[in-house]
Image (cartoon, rainbow, N blue to C red; front, side, top):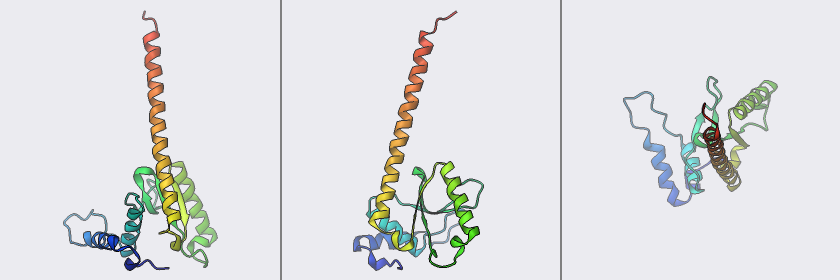
Length: 167
């Protein structure tokens, strides 16, 4: 199923068009990110409609490696991999492709990333948006819990230092 701008609610069509054309003006700085593709603009508008932050596309989530996440929310270490060509003998369904994908998933997990996988037709669905929302929320909760745990440890250390006799 090919995503079309006309499939979005009218309120989002203008937003998607604006994002699509926003980065196409020539700029002096060559390090500017490339403008979003038509599909990326439509997907961004979909996730915005679902109340999610705007994603980043083709995000290099593992430093020093060429691996990229198809769709990512780097601030939350959440990503979505769109598995195209799974019903054909494409790159991801060969032995070497499967090994590469396993390495990418494992390195991502070790780096703290949580990545969903879906087919292209499933990307702009409530199910995927809901799972991304859950992952983003659990990341916020985990961060808050870690912050609270560090605070308790620091408070405990300070209390120990005050209780220690000075020589």
